Image (cartoon, rainbow, N blue to C red; front, side, top):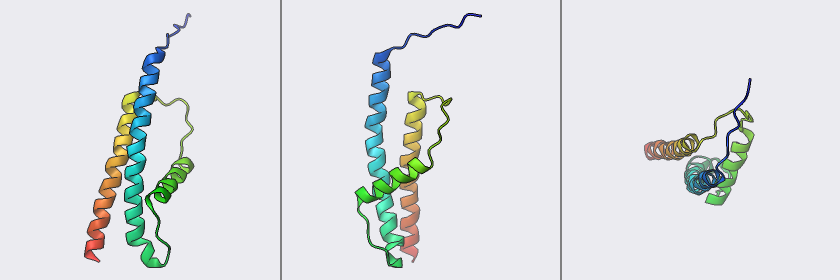
Length: 106
């Protein structure tokens, strides 16, 4: 049995890496903003101090690290990563919308 060795196109790998890096920045900013708003709406009234956007982004980084799945057999293609980052952004804004409705009803 002969296994076929794939040639790696490092230019394509670099472009995919840069696309992911460029998409991660607005993802963390979006999650940080939404997390800050939700924290300040619902946790601060309990007597905890307010947080800013950078602190909310830091909390998201810690939670992401703690929930990280170390399965190395996953398919890390550009499409999968972009879809995952898009889902994080959409879900954070939906959470903010839900939180604003709840805050409005309070």
